[in-house]
Amino acid sequence: MTRARRRLISCTLLVALHLNLLAKDPYLWLEEIEGEKALSWVRKQNEVSQKAIEGFPFFKEIHDQTLRILQSDDRIPYFSRRGRQLYNFWQDKEHTRGIWRRTTLNEYKKDKTGK
Image (cartoon, rainbow, N blue to C red; front, side):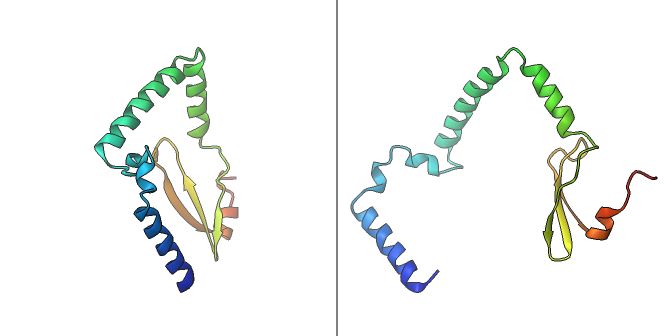
């Protein structure tokens, strides 16, 4: 970003603040993502949404089937290439929060089935 562009952005923000335009946003308090008011509102919205979703007649069946698919070990591990390394974000039963994996193209091409 050029110096002139940074200066223009700064001036624009100062003018907006001066004219009190930002204070007119009724949802500005949601910008405080760790603020208690915002978190309380999100919890309430999540509760409403969760009741609606779980009230769907086939929810349990769809949820269980989706979980089996997402936790299956026979998925294709798609990757992103960065230089000579391949990176992959992987989630399974053992790594429910996911892990970042790194390998080379030659290692990726190897047969992992034991054949």
